[in-house]
Figure 1 (cartoon, helix red, strand yellow):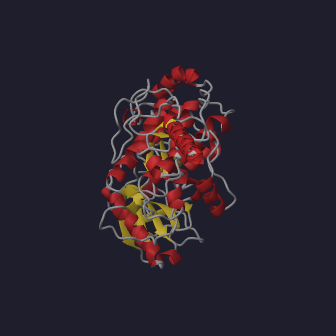
Figure 2 (cartoon, helix red, strand yellow):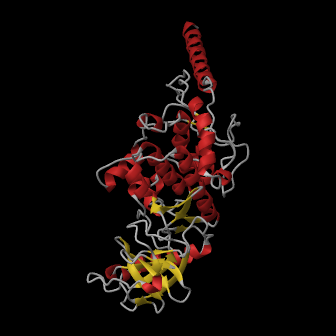
Figure 3 (tube, one colour):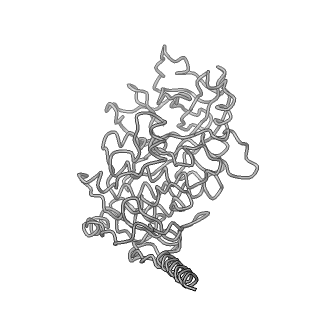
Length: 441
């Protein structure tokens, strides 16, 4: 392991120079730790084995440090609770549960949590693998939007990780750009999902930490049932959150805006977002109208009408950009390959959405799970609809899947309601005729 003698950052053995300041790296044991009068933990050995090197981030719950595991000789990150938070029994239990839950899950696309220990200064430390890269939030602050090929790869990897968690009845419940970490490689990003501290465990014997009616999560990415604190919340809340992240990645803004938490939640409960292809019309990458229809169904207020799994959502997003296959393939394909495929298909998808079919608005549109009304103006099929050309032919894995992707059916003439009206009018006419005959008699 190597370290920068100027900034103190740690790097793998094959690194030569610090990308932050260009300084030649030395072996970590040759670089002294710079003391910090504002933080006495810097330079200390925590939990008998973790040498604290520097502060990486500071949040409401705790502070994250870069450290060396002196026993395993590896690079780690330590998240240590703030003293006041460590005294909160519920916050401490959530911190412990983040360790317990993360240890249950495969770690290719979920941060590997290694240890949980009390500290000598009265707090607790969660030890994780150290990740090189940046949060999705940092990338969006810098670049505002994400290229389609990069988006498909990132969303596919998030779906691979979350579908596995959902299969185990674990709902992340706080999915947001801050909790999606991007580790850059020559083939594209490797995603790591962070922070399972707010997880909702749906298994029958799980310990409940949230009082009914309490909202947990980040308002901008919160599903309606989550905003209302409903105990019926399940994995489809993560589908909504991922759809909100996708919307932000392509348009540069969140789908539901407000000046504070309550106003954001009111928007979520009562409004529909503007079509992303309209909001992001000036985007350098282009947003096809096909993506409007995908996100419309992912933003259904009723979870039963929503796209059923994050895997199905990722499949639909890739298909909206004209890709064939599934998210499990796209998540591991190189970004360059995905870019070439999308480059060939995107121009044909950038046509205007088909106009709405004429219909009798008095009777409205079917509200069943088979056909639901798209708030962007186009009816879309939900469950069991026939496949359209170019969409995945196989159902994605998961606890409950949308067997086929979204298609645009022709709205049928409302024969049933019209027949009822005609029968009623006939009965009324017959009654009038009978009354007239009785009076004449």
